[in-house]
Length: 94
Image (tube, rainbow, N blue to C red; front, side):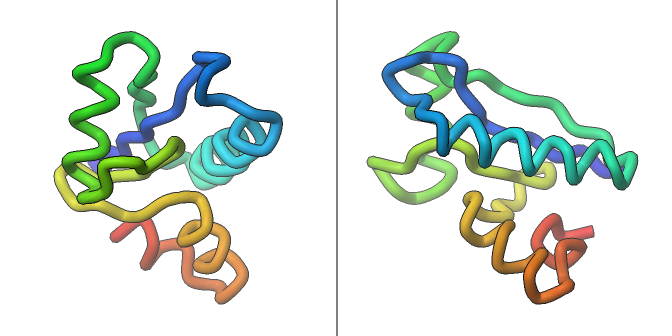
């Protein structure tokens, strides 16, 4: 089973209308394709935010960030570009 891990947030310090929309689009896509995923809310602890940033390799990375297992898929812009190019499966490393 493919497991996609998303790093969204509900914390108002991080979430803007744009970030909320980006998170929603990613989850809607996954739901429509019946791809199993789980979300890790970085607002739950500073450690989760730091873990996300370390895995991404960017100390100032913002959510959402997407992983398939331990493989980094990318952020919203990479997701959007892949959908526009007709290659979302490549983005999610399916």
